[in-house]
Amino acid sequence: MGKLSSLITSTVLVMVAMANAAILNYEEALTKSIMFFEGQRSGKLPPSQRIRWRKDSGLQDGSDLNIDMVGGYYDAGDNVKFHFPMAFTTTMLAWSVIEFGEKMDSELQNALEAVRWGSDYFLKATRNIDSIVAQIGESIADHGCWERPEDMDTPRKTYVLSKERPGSDVSGEIAAALAASSIVFQGQLTDLARSQTDYILGNNPLGISYMVGYGDKFPQKIHHRGSTLPDLDVHPQHIQCGEGYEFFKLTTPNPNILTGAVVGGPADDDSFLDSQYNISQSEPTTYINAPFVGVLAYFSKAMPKKIRKIMY
Image (cartoon, rainbow, N blue to C red; front, side, top):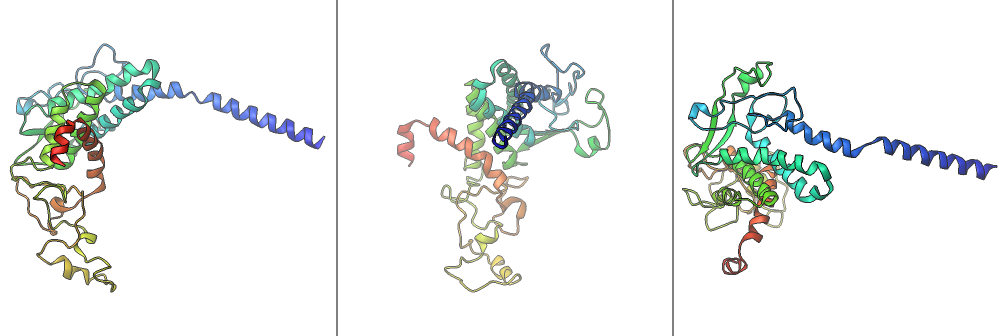
C-alpha cells in the first residue's frame, strides 16, 4: 500500500501541476502585453485602437518649432515624450518581432503596428539631416500636474539635438531603433540609422570618433579609473584611495586604452574637451555601448564584401 499510495500521490501532484499550468494563458498575456502600447500612444489615434478610453492627445507637438512631432509613445505614467526610452522600447519591440514574430500568430499584425508607431515617429524626429528631436514636453512642469494626456496644458517644448547641442546616447538609441525597424519592414530607414552611426564613428564636424580605439582620432583621456591608472604588470604595488589622483591629474594620454568604449560625446557648441575632468563628455558607460552593438552588427553585414575587404 505504501508504494501504491506514493504513486497515487505523485499522480495527483502531477495533475495539479498540469492544471495550474493550464490556468496560465500565455496567448492572452501576449495579446494584452501588446495592447498596452496602444494605451501609451500619443497623437491621432487610428480606427484600429483597441483601448477605447484613450483619445487623441498631443496634436500640437512640435508646433513651437513649426515641425510635426505628433505621435510616438508616452514611456510611462506621465505625459512627456522622452525619446531615449521611447527609442529603446521601439528597438526591443522590433527585435521581439524579428526573433519571435512567427510565433505571434494573430498578434503579429498588432506587434507590427506597435513597432511602426514608434519608427514612424522617429522618422519625423530625424527628418532634418543636421538635427534630431530628443524630447517633447517639460518634465518638471509635467510631473507637477496630474492630468490626462487629452487634457494636458503644460508646456510642450521641443528639445532638439544639433551640432551645437549634440547627444550621442540618444542618437545611438534612435539609430538602433531605426535599424531594427528597418529589418522588420525592410524599408528606407537604414540610411537614417547609418547617418547617426557614422556621426558617432567620426563623420562629424570635429572628425573625431567617439569610440575609443576606432579611427585615427579618438578620446585619449577618458574618465575611467582603470584606464587612467597603470596596470598591475607595470605597477604591481597597491595604490591607496587618494594616491590614484596623482595619476588622474596627469595631462598625458591614459596609459590603458579601453578599446570600444563610446563616451558621452561633444558639448553643446559641438566642441569636445578631451579630459578626464570632463565627466559628462568623456565617461563611457555600458548603456551607451549596449544598443550600439546590434546597430554595428547590422551595418557590418549590410556593407558589400568587396568594400569590407578594402577597409579591413
